[in-house]
Length: 312
Ligand code: APR
Image (cartoon, rainbow, N blue to C red; front, side, top):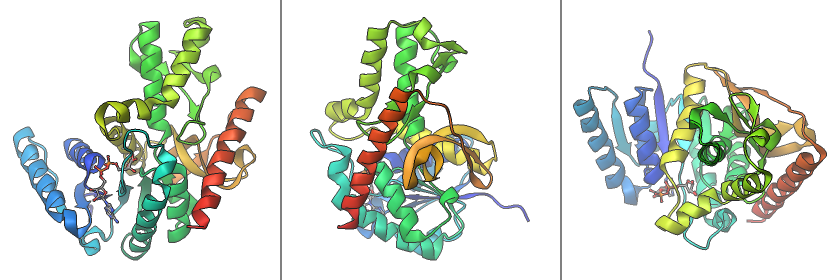
């Protein structure tokens, strides 16, 4: 018998709450909002508020708050935001030792309760967290992805659209590499409805936009004292929707690489196709020598952090 999708959100904080709101509004499925026992009240309170929100809006989804892993059992999609966010002055990498312990705990529980889920990791430092989650669970690489590129590309598209004075939906931008200062915005693949952005925006302006995109997360942390949540949540929901509805969207995600782009045993931001079986394809694009050098540098930074994580 057909049944509704079940979406487990691990972490009921700022991003977790917004994820639940988007799942409900889009009627993606029933939602379990999970947090640690000390935050169970927060998870239950947000769940109840959101169910009541649905009653006002006329949408219907069961939303449950819990600190009991058994309630997540059988989830079709799991989105992980468990962990601490950045504070001003911190880099994503500064979160490593705290969030590593959390992701290992989450991984052990997913293995037990959600072995068939498509898992999207959002916690930072992203590329290491998603690598570690896959390692701990032993899940197939195609069922574990990291959310970074959709957000970074979104930020890039916004800044390009504002500069070119065009609608943001007509701008397509490509971002590769790690989710951090070494991310690689690939200008040769950025277009306004097919027109290369280099024809529309001067080189110095483009360089400034690339820099702002690299620091897009930090800019918000500085303003709010914590990290962004609306756009990160929308980006993760875009990926989850592509899986649940077999949309086969081509999206930049942190994906497991097995030789693609010359990298083995690594998670890195690359274009992938997400469909009903998970990551159905890692798409390899041609890069200039400069772009490949930037990607190599980004991969080296991610690998360094992975090595550091092995000692923690
Ligand atoms: N299991 C489940 N939830 C946990 C665990 C755990 N072991 N440890 C912590 N959490 C919960 C916290 O209790 C908190 O409610 O994760 C939630 C995180 O929420 P916020 O502090 O509001 O952080 P948020 O802004 O949602 O960001 C979460 O995503 O983008 C990244 O850098 C960001 O790593 C951070 C994560």
